[in-house]
Structures are given as structure tokens and as C-alpha cells.
Length: 289
Image (cartoon, rainbow, N blue to C red):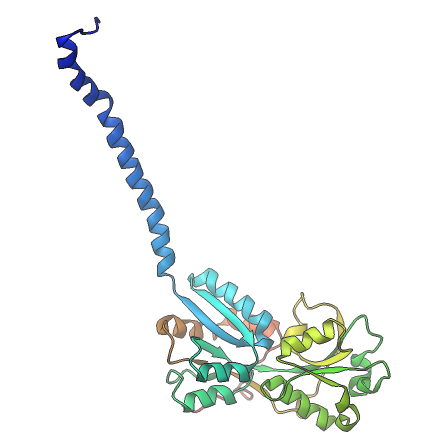
């Protein structure tokens, strides 16, 4: 075919451009639009997923992490976990801290929030019963499993770690147990106090204390490290009845209630049991509404 020349080329060129350039331009625009939609849809879906802010007592460090992983996988709801002492959380919530749910290591703090009108009605309830253990790392020569309370009198024991009883329920229970052991006056000068039960455990793990009164739920984690332990008799301290409450200030009330319903299911209860928590009919005491 002979290429047009002169005036014929000017008449033929617009048709050539229309057939060779316009379709690719349209095709590129269509591809770009499709790409934008494909990017926007997942971003929109991600933005629509709710997030729950959870304040959890430090004895739940490992159990709640497992619970969150299981629930997020099932529901797609992200759980933003903060661990600390129950008393400190209680004060923060009173001052407007933006949590959706509060898992306490006792029942008193949730009850007080309920009475103050800061809790969603009919949500405060018992979720687990905690336990105390006397624990020392494997690097120490002492063995609480053999010597029980008498371990505290061993000459190698210079420091004994417990949680601060002023704002940590496990600290109050530890202090009560020590007094009931009959050894408190002999060992009280050796006591060092962690801000919460997880920090208390760190004191012992790091060697800053040779032994400590810890939460059983912490030492049962595979990541906790080797050691020797003795379960402190339940009769020596007031039961650690642990309760949860949904907060009235929650921005995601439906998601909050759904998660509280889920923790009562068999899969969630199996995780609690893995870390030594119990919830028997005799021990669980729902909080008055």
C-alpha cells in the first residue's frame, strides 16, 4: 500500500491517530480505574473493621494474648491490649481513659465502676479464678516445691518479690498468704514490690529477687522460663475472683458485647484453663447488677 502524500496525508492522518492512539488511551484509563478500585476496596474493608481497646490485669499477659489471637482470626476484630495493675486501670478509667473493656484481677474494681455508673448495665461478671504460687528460677539452689514456705528462710534468699498490695490484687493476696504462713515478721524486710504481677515476675526472672509470690497463669507459659514452684494453699488467701466489665464510654458497644459473649465459649475457656484459671460453679460469683 502506498503511503499518502501532501493533501491526502492531511486528510488521512486524523483517521490514523483515532484508530492507533485513542483505543490504547482508553484502555490505559480503564486499567487505571480498575487498579484504583482494587486498592480502594481492601482499604475500605480494613477501615470498617472495629478495634477494641482492652485494659487487662498483668496476670493475663499470656492468656489474653492467646485469646486475642484466636478471636481476631475468627472475627477480624482487632484487640488492642494494655497490661498493668488493676488499681492503676481503675484510676485511669475513672479519669476517662478510652478503654472498651476492663479485665480486673479482682471483683472489687469492676463492682466500683458499676456502682459509679461507668459500666454498661449487666456486663460485670466473673471470668476466672486466679491462683498464687511460690516460684524461684532454676538457677537458684532453693526449691519451694520441697520446702514450701520454709524456703523463704533459706540464707541465700535476700529478696522476696510480691506485687504492690496498694493497687495489685495479687499483691494483696500475697501479703495475706505471707501473714497466714506465720513467717511475715521474719521476712518482711526482704520484700520488694513490683508495680504489677508481671513486673514482679521480672524481678525474680532477672535475679533481682531470689524468689517471689507470683500468678500461676504466668509461670505456666512456655516462654516464662524454667523454675521450681509450689502452689500456695487456697485456704491461706482470699480467692482471687477475677471479673470483667464493659465500659459505658466504649465506642464499639456491639463489638464489645460480642467479645464478652465469646470468652464464655468452650474454645475461650480452654485457653483460660491452659493457664491455670478455673471457673467452677462454687467459685464464680456474678457481680450484683
